[in-house]
Length: 500
Image (cartoon, rainbow, N blue to C red; front, side, top):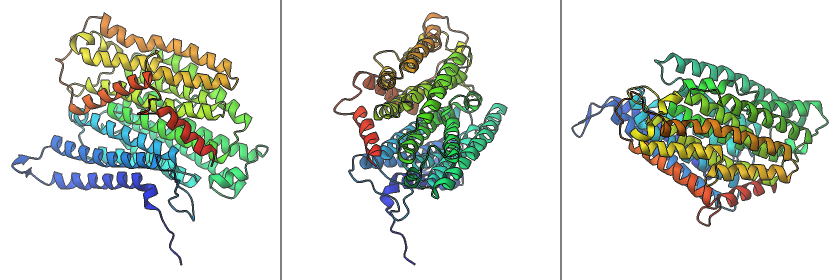
């Protein structure tokens, strides 16, 4: 029996994250048994800091290795004899983005978990396990690898959603996410089974070779796979879980899932569309057209009536899924590139907004009500200015990354003859300005209530806010600068997939 020749470098970022998760679990056990280190008493806060730094170090190493892979010309498989996972510019770029986003989420969680009295070390291990699953998803070229990555991503997040075990809402959030997520996984798996029945293989390449749009089983399989991804990206009508889960989960967990899950799910969906069923059937383009329209309208209209900030941002996340779906409708390289660029901009915008919520947590109480932002410009002017920037970018105001991202998506739709859908997107962007600017208006034009005295920003929160603000302004002014040509990276990653 000949052993397979495995290229461990192809899964290097995943290995770094996996090793880090194991060390975090072992570190918590060892540190909890030590009373003191060099005459310093080992407290839960100190343990949390050590484990968070450990997780961030391994996430940083994974990010750096992914960036190196993104610049490499070769596209190695983990196992060339049985190709299920491939490293290319697309997967490496998204792996780097996921590693960076997870690193920032660990940084903002240090002080938050301590304030909420849920500073347990397994938090960082769960984040690392979930990140490993996401990295597996974005590089998968086989349905089995996609499903394995999806479950490795989802199961830790089910636990994280209920991480605040003393709060009923957090437990309810975890249960809802678990039940709906399991249902979505079942639909996805059934769709994969149908595609396997049609093609006789789970490989994207074999499915593409046997793809027959006239076969009802093929259409049913693709449809169920799209439905399964629809749950993960929070598109209408598969969005029902999003507001309740975002509201009930701890704010740091909501920040993590709102950014990384959408990145991984859209990346895996794009790879599936390009490698397994390209050229995309016209019927599937019509399906995305309807999904985009419904998602835009429902997400933006429902956000108008929200008084809870986390629910408002949840419906905002749904609306942004609609803008991203616009880029999938044409089935063109320009549309896919616009979606890739949009995802990176969205990560900084949304992560920054949730970091402000995390920074405003005091005495174990989250800042959840929109009215809680009244007069914030007087008590904490720096946070108010940053929150205003993030809201403006989410709304797509010129000068921010959000404007460039929406412009690219709408331009791709217009170029493909989808002018009505682009007009709907522009109109919904105008509607979104109302609920996004509600918060800045309250911060600058209302009197502050009886709030607890302001506290200093934690180091991790400051770093995340500064990096997100810089990225939003930089990408809004220089979206394709020579030092950071994100637009070129997006186009080149898509071109490489199209040439496969």
